[in-house]
Length: 180
Image (cartoon, rainbow, N blue to C red; front, side):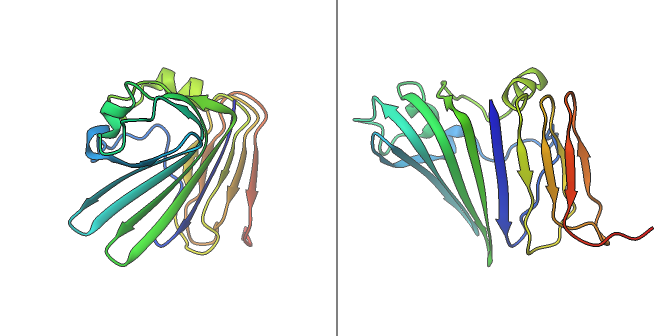
């Protein structure tokens, strides 16, 4: 499997794999707001925070999932996800993450967003592409696991950019000037 991950917007940054911070949102915090055979939308709102995820792909068993929590809906939903676009708003800041799966990812029941190291190695073991925000400077730090990965680090001047390629032949692209 190959995954292309891009991020953009205020406060956007590639994250460090594996993520050691505990998740603050669980699958049951998200509510399914719309479902069609080719699109699934889930959302959550809290004080000063909102998240909307729109997944496109091929979905079945969608007849009664609107209004359910994502955790409950994922127990009956079947199909595959080709693309996920997540928009997060915190106060006045907003950023968007886009993840494209090639081939599409099979839907499995979701009870937690925490993944084990083995699950991360399987999910990100293909030839992946990671692209940071080209507008907002952040310290990108990511782990590619296996495969021939491409890391497009969008700032390298005064910001710390780190990548860990794992197995395979990996390429890092720095889109800004460097100094020796």
